[in-house]
Amino acid sequence: MPEEDSVSKLLRLKRFEQPPPGYFEDFLVEFQARQRAELLRQSPWERFSDWLGGLAPAFEVPKLAYAAIVVCAIGVSAVIMGQPGGQSAVLASHVASAPSLSLSSPSAASIPVGEPLPVALTSTGSPSVHYVLPTRPVSYASSRSF
Amino acid sequence: MEPTETPDNELVARTQAGDARAFDELIVRYSPRLYGLIYNMTSNHEDTNDLLQDVFSKAYRSIRGFQGKSSFYTWLHSIAANMTINFLKKRNRRATMSLDDVDNGIANDPDFISATAEHDPRHQANLSELQKKLNEAMMKLSIEHRTVVTMFDIQGMPHAEIAKILGISEGTVRSRLFYAHRQLQNYLQEFIKS
Image (cartoon, chains in turn cyan, green):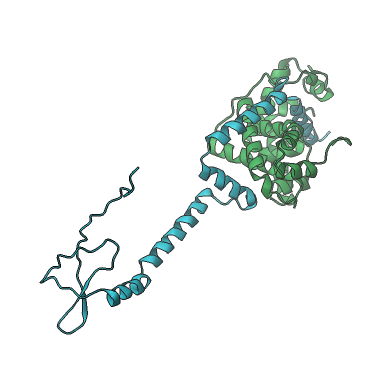
């Protein structure tokens, strides 16, 4: 008998190596308990990334890749919002509608919160922006009383 | 699969629809076979138990993405083989073998009787000795060679199935088996009759 067949025959004996009796019954119970514990332990983000990973297991997309995509999206949004063009339209409308005031004669009139900032006209007639502190400080407390 | 058993694809569909008990049936069906695969690659009962839990956890989490392009059997075995290979590569240690796990049926196996027959008084082998030698020989193989030997010689899978599970060609499976058998012949000389 070729030696290679003898090797195969010897290896087939390893099929007799089995776990102790009752192992597979206990295995299922242990698996169910572990699943319940995992669900309780997982954060919402982990459950979400597991759900996403389950949709495309063949690609084995790392969980960090999803986080990277979200961070990139937030970053791009922040960049767009930070662009001067993004706020220029807002500033132009404030300049056009604000009454003319100057710092040389500070106005005693209070400026309601939320109103556009006053803009003074220079001698050349072009607007220049001055900042006037509102009389009412910023407060995060609710104005309502209970 | 027994004729009265629910087909795998039906159990998979029910699991995907949210029926956890369908997945339990799949566990009962495949855990013995997967246990054999993982145990013969690791030669350690405790590691096998942990890995088997991890394999079914991963399968459960991923099953919604299973589209049936391969059989569920192939898909599940692929998860088990790859997770075990990754585990062994990370650990990169010699396994501590569990010697108490041998079924009593081996004593009546003709191949065992033949392998341990006292044809030379200087080489009296018993059950533990043979098991120990087999496990030692397997652990001397590289992870890749041990995997194909486990699947082909111990689990009885055909070359084509092994190739699909491991994502390699049939030619690679055959060449790894050839090399592994040569190695094992050297390690197991005393048990191989001429």
